[in-house]
Image (cartoon, rainbow, N blue to C red; front, side):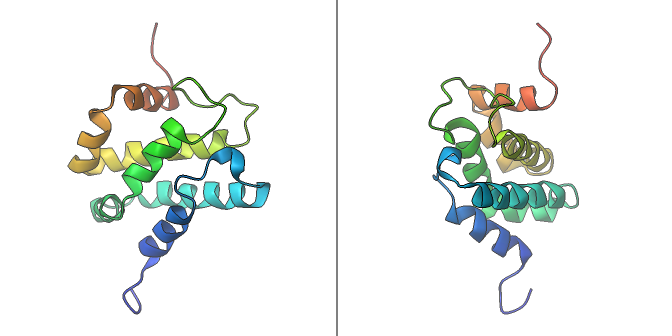
Length: 131
């Protein structure tokens, strides 16, 4: 860290800037930037428990849950967006980040595990459920 701000802080600040901004309201540049930041978060959640703990403490769990469950004006079902939606990749990356964080952070796991609708979305992103 330099001057008290590290990479996790910067990534979280960028994500927070677009918290509660619908996918549909992002132009193509900002959609790409948000998706890229979520992709980087997904990558850093692979590495250490400390990263997942810090991201959870910075509010990333709640931001990504909102993005998955309420992030689009035109999605009425609680599932990942169809392939025609430009935010499909960002949604999958959000789900992957939450799965990685929940694997390494009990608080995140409890938050995600207490939401049956979110569990269905996460299972869908992980390959779906057998019917």
